Image (cartoon, rainbow, N blue to C red):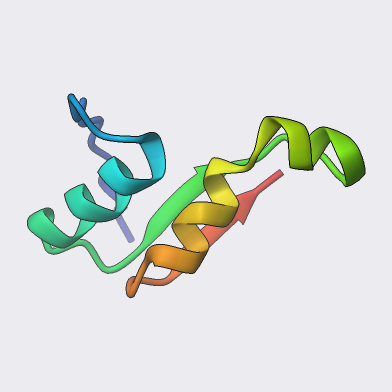
Length: 65
């Protein structure tokens, strides 16, 4: 089985918003993201793009840590 991968640069969008919009526009059926796995106060202060993508996306999201 062959899996293809493509890198896309989206301008003028917050990262999570750009990722979700690009997946919809490209007709993708899965979003794969890496995460630092921060917890507690560091996560609250730094935010989490992965968490935002999961909450905004209608496409399944796979988080790799």
